[in-house]
Image (cartoon, rainbow over the protein chains, first blue to last red):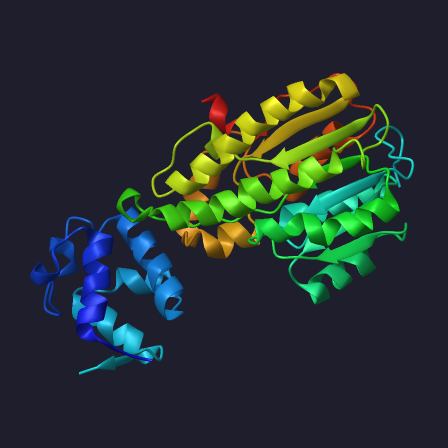
Length: 82
Length: 253
């Protein structure tokens, strides 16, 4: 099933308690208040539930921006429309 | 084989969650003490493998999905009627869905309540029914958690489900006491299991940090199984409605 970048941003907005308008691929993760240990665990669980993508905390620690999350989803087979 | 004490002498015990690390150890332990088991689980192959690893003693398996709490009684009852009297039950099945408070939606909490609490209560009410239970003896043990006693970030649904188990089992204990059926919980500290390894999403470093906070160091499934064995066994005459915390001192701090 193909999803859009906006679908992913909407999911991230819910997980990190931000407005979807405030999120974009360029947004730095360290600038997001909810990007803490529990936020990361919740994100991992939601990615697994919603897209069947399993990430390790070690992989996530290397992420700098939302674009990195989108890239790893694509690499793991999620069909995200450009 | 040490069968001095805690000998079930062929009494029948129903077990869930036996393909998990703790559940498997409990099944092995009570089977070694001459219990006849009924193993419940979702995966037929896993259950058959488990069955093959037990010392033979007329053990039975029942394939059922504990997420579907409405079906459990219908699936289990016909077999238990053939096998009765049923002496005891241990609910080891459990799931954890780590979520922040803001993402702890009702359906996410419900999933944990269904498996951790309601499925166990469905089986307990069947096993302890007058139609099914042994005469004037019996024991029910639910595997709870130290998270019934302490909070943890990201674990609202899990903590809620485990607290509910402890409260429900106290009520069960008082109600069943006139028929000499005991009901207790065992609350493990952190033990490496398939649930803690994968479902919890914790990294190796995060798990090690938790383990390091246990004054007696890391525990194992056999530490939990020993406590369950005693509470379930006919040697337990006067312990009911309580929670045995097996956590290497974690909650003593």
